[in-house]
Image (cartoon, rainbow, N blue to C red; front, side, top):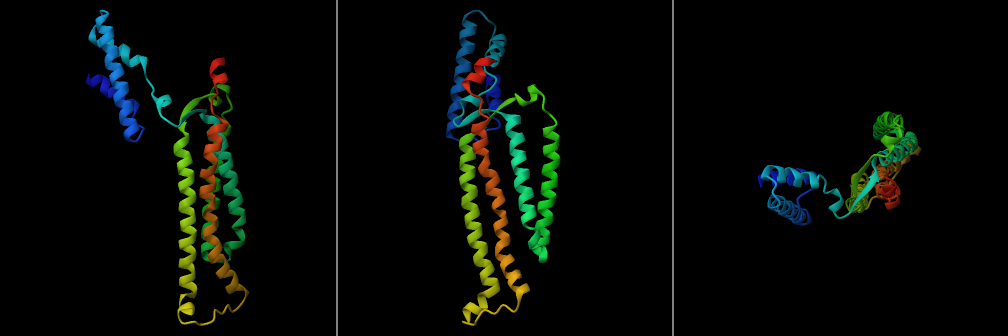
Amino acid sequence: MDSLKNHVDSMFIKYKANNQIKELKAEVLSNLEAKVKDLMQSGMEYSQAVNKAKESINSIDYLIDGNRKVYINKYKLEYLQISLLYSIITWITTIPLTIIGAGILLNWILFICSFILGVVYFQYSRKRESEYLQCKDFINLEFMLKARKMAWIIWDLYIVVITLCTTVIRFGSNIWFSRPINISGPYQFAEVTIGYVLPFVSIIIPLIINIAPKLILRYEVGEDDENKE
């Protein structure tokens, strides 16, 4: 039954081996082995029975908890569009921050990201054929919801840590020795302010991740759509 086991392993190859996946693999393999025995009892040769059993199930995506069947190319197209819009807006808002070196670097990085996203979006948007837009695939909604929650937690921790570090680096000695904090002029004030503001630009990352679950639900294939086919 190695052939059946290899077939089952290939269907689960993109899923991380956790308890649910292990149990599901064992169940699918057991069902296929039982099907082979039934076919052989009805007079079919072993090799034919194995091939017949394999043909009876070539995908297990619909069995995985949290998987949603979506119009995958519509989903990707809008995801790219929104990501491009966020990137361009963030790039524009960081232009005033280019008065210091870190601001210039960040602005250029965002410009390059916007350009790359624009090229990719342009390539996808050219494919407007009905068959292309009607392509379906599975995306795990539960995973994306966990990713969204984790992205915001990590971002919150990052902002807290980087703000504390910036304060210690800039004003640590003043605070330690109880000296007054002196800002000599507008440029220094702007430099200090930008030092605190720059990390908040990273909010674009959790914002982009945040839209994934909404788009999954928007482009989920409904029962009515399946029945039409």
